[in-house]
Image (tube, rainbow, N blue to C red; front, side, top):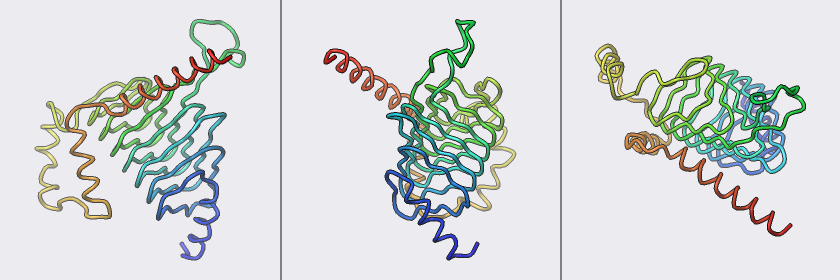
Amino acid sequence: MNPLLRTWRTWVHGRKFAKKGLHCRFPAKYLEVDGHVELGDDCRFRNNVILRTKGEGKILFGTRSGCSYFCFLEATKLIKIGDFTGLAEFSVVRDTNHLVLGTSAHWRLTPYIAEPIVIGNCVLITSRVYIGPGVAIGDGAVIAPNSVVTKDVGPLEVWGGNPARKLAHRTEGLVAKMMQRKYGQLLEEFGLHRERYFEDMERASEQATDGINRAALERDRYKAELAASTADQDIED
């Protein structure tokens, strides 16, 4: 792409965000930002990405994270995406959905389910993934293509399917040992790619090995704060 055009588009799209870190790039011709969206440093967005919030909702991206082509994110409460996390093309993340179970009423008439979503550091969301309300995805996890995620995903776990279920752990178990035997020589031969934030990415990846689902803890903390705020508002009323 022409560097002047890329700079121009980055400037134009950058004005749409509530907060933007350093060195972010938006070479896309079309990027919709509707509502409160914050970015860390070095975020990237491809063409035809839609980031939309309603009411008090927020979408927060960490450092070196972003979305590929035709991703759609919508928040009425919170969607938080950690550092070094990527969403591949055609993925959808919505913290809101219609209430359809437990009632026969038309879905347009039912109230919305709205629960915060937190996606951790170093997570790979592959193509055509749907992530629903209330989900927390731990650090270093991988979601396989065409998956529908409705439950929490632990750190370094690989999930896939509709509905998504745990398929493997990246470093533990039979599958990990089989892949290590088959492809382990690639790491020995080529090593890891060196790039900006390499050491930070290594630290974030190592943090995932302790098995603590920090995304779930953060999601629960936000829900507790929201409940307390709602209770205080009810008392004032």
